[in-house]
Length: 206
Image (cartoon, rainbow, N blue to C red; front, side):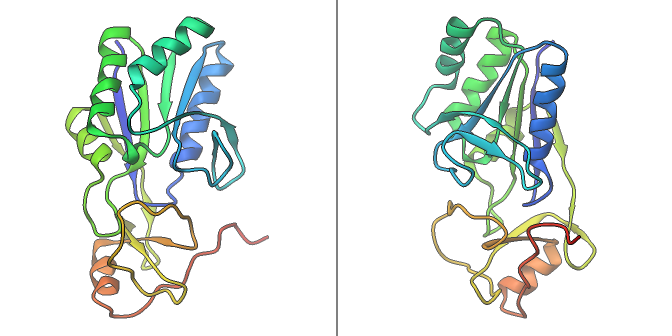
């Protein structure tokens, strides 16, 4: 039976790597997938879904106003049977789009695997994550580590000096140069102005 899955974490936990691995596993078995990616995130190029370790694949770009069930129906009409839908940066979904993904599962019988952040730099739920947490059939946390050694569950937006940014729009696209994953305790400290965070290396040293 098809289900809606939500895999959530803080930044840099390997969500996109897991998404691309899942897509590869389907393809290896001769099954077709469709990756959905929000149009506002074009860090890797237009319609490209890429992980920090170098894996990449083509994605179907969508905007907040798009009907995802209609997009999937059009894809099936053009390309044939679809075995799985994967959603990158799922926190950027609207409430309506999360409901449309439940229709992809319930009406079309296609499993949907959504990957995204749970909370923003203020510690508040993203809209897409809020409704995925409410409506998904399966929830799974992807764990990552804070610089303190504890499990990281929060995300801090920082300036060029490693100081916490506490004001601004909820959505501001960026990577290691703007965001750091931390534990709740470290989140409280850095947001209160007690210290700064060194920006993390984007790649493993040789």
